[in-house]
Amino acid sequence: MPGPADELWIRDPEALRVFSEPMRLKILQLLQTPASVKEVAGTLGLPAPKLHYHVKRLLDQQLIRVVEERREGHLVEKLYQVSARRFRLANPLAGDALPDEDTAALFSGMIEDSRESLLRSLQDSASGEAERPVFTRKRLRLTEVALHRLRTELLELITRLNREDYRREDEDSLSCDFTLILNQTREAE
Image 1 (cartoon, helix red, strand yellow):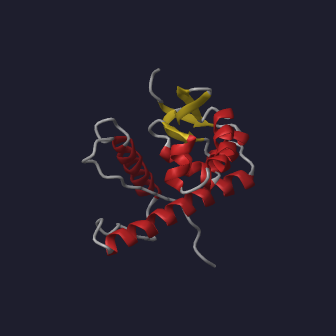
Image 2 (cartoon, rainbow, N blue to C red):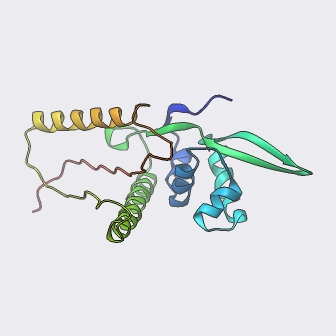
Image 3 (cartoon, rainbow, N blue to C red):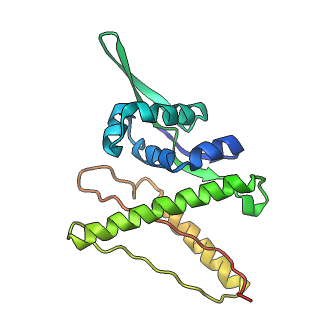
């Protein structure tokens, strides 16, 4: 069976709701490589029956797919994998119509997942298991041209990071999370 597609656009509000739930985001991260519900549950420290509902919702929205079935006697264990290496979301800020509650759920889920990742990274760096994370928040005053140039350069960087030559899954590779929020703000009154 061929591997996951390079990218999948999520435009349907129901698919966005399914995608944006924090537990499902964790499952999607773990299913970058094929795994069973039992294996994912073990990694998350949860009972497998609790994850079956989430896996079914992801499968129904075609965000994951069955890539293999293993038979052991009368039992069938399915291996799942993401349908795409990268999910692209319809941009409600650019006019793509998504209900406000779906947009809020997506952003809060992504921010919470980033927060948890940052806290784990801080703990790992304190114990010497990882380098200290790079974390910064800056408010810039840019011209419209400079803002456009910055946005373009950041998107080019993200594109480069998503290329095959950056993605490694061997034992020498290091896992890292990258969260970027670039938004135009109004001055506080």
